[in-house]
Each structure stands twice: as structure tokens, then as C-alpha cells.
Amino acid sequence: MILDENGMNCAMLGLPEPISEAPAIQHMEEIQEVNPKVLNIEQRYVFNSVINAVSEIDRGLETNHRLFYLDAPGGSGKTFLFNMIHDYLVAQNVAVSTSAWTGIAATLLKNGKTLHSIFKLPVPLTETITCNISPNSDQANILRQVKVFIIDEASMIPRYALNAIDNCLQDIMNNNSIFGGKVIILGGDFRQVLPVVPRAPPAAVLDVCLKKSPMWHNFHQLKLSQNMRTKENEQVFSQWLLQIGNGRVQSSLDNVSDDTIDIPEQCVCIDSLVSDIFDNCTQDEMKSRVILSPKNVDCLKVNEDILRRLPTESKTYLSIDSVSSDNEMEANNYPIEFINSLTPSGMPPHRLNLKVGSIIMLLRNLSITQGLCNGTRLEVLELHNHSILASIMSGSHAQERVLIPRIKLNSSDNSPYLPRLDNYLILKH
Image (cartoon, rainbow, N blue to C red; front, side):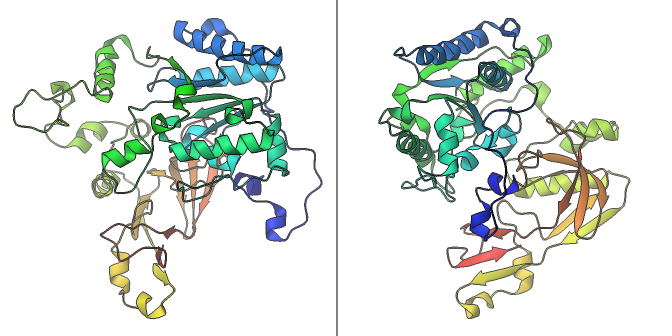
């Protein structure tokens, strides 16, 4: 199971194949009773649109809509709707695949996996990528049986990744129809994070979005707008956030840039942001509070400030850094003190201070099925020299205790602040 999650098999490691039953496609846990009456009007329209499309295909009828894109801001019930569609179709013996671009989003879906895992997308992604799936492989046989693909966080998918999936399904199905004739349901919010293009201007980021894909016009556009999380006194703030995402909020001041906005007075912190958020609250209340920071350097400062407020004893973990290079003389040019001062993107600092009771976040996908993926928040229970015992804070695996081992991390970050970290010089942490 662990090898399958990481796109590997026993043959790749020279191990004998285990004797087991054919891999299951569908969710094997107990399926909850599906009651579309609990859906609001918008959700019910999306539900019926998808179910009708699948029904028409089963009856051999030609349908105009096999591809759907669901525009759904945070809190509009997209994940709840996707899980209900999944359960309904599985109850009808329809093979369904649920996935997301990020691991943390995949943990919220029934039997969710990452898109990289399902279609064996390579890393890094380039314009010419192809899915590493042979038409005669076991993975191809599984995908061949799947009738409906539900894909969340689609706004983060580069258009060439979607093209690779389209080509893969056409080859597997031996069908020249778009996506091999499968029903595809994409969900996301373009107001949020777009595809990540390191150090690229906004125009380059927009160029790799799904909306720039030649197949975008084939998707039937659906929408959710009603926020299902906010209380009555939070509706105004919710609408204000949506207006920011739509680019309709501007500053009332003169001579400021177009990306400057006015923050409501009730949202402005006068003194210390950390004090306003974390003072006068219990340790349990601290778990449900978080400060978002766009820059890692600010995030590290906030974390240290919060850590000092915890009454438990601090333990410091030091990284063992080195430079890997084809040129040994080149690697020796960098003093260890200088290497230790670097904090590349996606890696922890050289000196990591932690306390029992502090909140940590995983930076790697360890096991999607166990809820351990990039972005999972955990509470530290015990601190050991080479491992950390922690409790998962949210999701279907909440309260489960897990052991996080010390692992090796490699960075190929080409940041101008790092020493020539390119294809032949990599920082190991």
C-alpha cells in the first residue's frame, strides 16, 4: 500500500510481488446514506447534473456534458457535495476516483489520493510531461474501469498537467474523445492559489492556468455561492473576502498601487498581533487559532514568539547540512556555518525549537491514507532525539497518535539568495 501511494511497486525494488486480490477502485468503508434533500439549491443542481450525465452514458445516450468545472469559494460545501456524489455513484456500482492536487485536500475526500499518485505525473512538471502509465499496466486497468473522476483544487493544476491526463486516458481507453470519454468533475476557486511558477511574473502564472488550456471551453461551468460555514453576523465579512478575490475592492486613498486595499477597522491590530490572537486563551483554544503569513521569515518570527508563551521546556533540533555537487571542489567552497544559515523553500530552519504542546505542520507527504501529508497540523506530545510523537489535529484521522521520524530533505531551490542551487548543486538538510 505504501509503495502504491508513492507510485512504486515491488518489481522496482527487486522484491517479489505479493499474492493478493485485485486492487479495489472504490471506497471500501461503510457508505453513508445519501440524502440529496440536505443539499441547498445550488448543490442539488450540481448533483443532478453529474448524476444525469452518468445515467445518460449508462443508457448509451449521447450527452452534451461529460466535463464539469465547479467554481466554489471556501465554505460553500464543495467537499461535502463531492463526497455525496461519490457515495451515491458507488452505491450504484459506478467506479469513481477522487483526487486533489494537494495532499491535504485529498484527505478530505472519500478514498482521496493526489493527482500525481493516480496518474503518475512526474516531478518537476514541464510543458512536455507525460503520465508514467503503460496501457498494459495494472494502473491502466484500474483507470480503465473508472467512469467518473472527481478532482479537487483544480485551480492549482497547470494546463499541461491536464493535457497529459487527457492524453493518458485517451491512450488507455483507445478512444480519441476528450479524456477518453470519461466523466470529469473539476472543483476549485481561481480566487485562491494558482499554479506555482517559481519567481515568475503574474502573466506567466496566468499563462499556465487551466483557463488557458484549449480544452477549457469543453467544461460545463457550475457554481456554488452560498457560504455554509458563516454565521449571520459573519456574512458581511464573507462577502468582503469574495469581493477581494474578484478584484472589486480598492483603496480609497490616492496615489497608491492598484493592489492596495482598505482593511476594515475591526480587522486592524493596533499592538501585537500575537497578543491579540493568543493571549487570554487556554492551550486547547490555541489549537484552533492561527496566524497566516505570506513570507517564511515573518512566519519564523511569529512561531518563536508563540513558542515562548508555552510553559513547557524547549528542545532544539539541529539539521545536518551538506552540499551535493558533481564537482567536489565546488561543494567544499561553502562553509558549514553559511549553509546552516540558509532556509530554502519547503524546508525547516537549521535550528528548530519545539515544545510539548506546540503545533507543527508536516512539509512532506508521508502517507495520504493515514492523513500525514504536506500541510497536516499536529500537536506535539513527546520530543525524542530522532522522532516526535504527535497527535493529528483535524480531518478523518483527528486525535490519532503518529510517530514522525527524522528524514532527509533535499532542496533544488534556485532562489537568488542561495548558492547556485541548480541541477548539479543541491542543498541536503
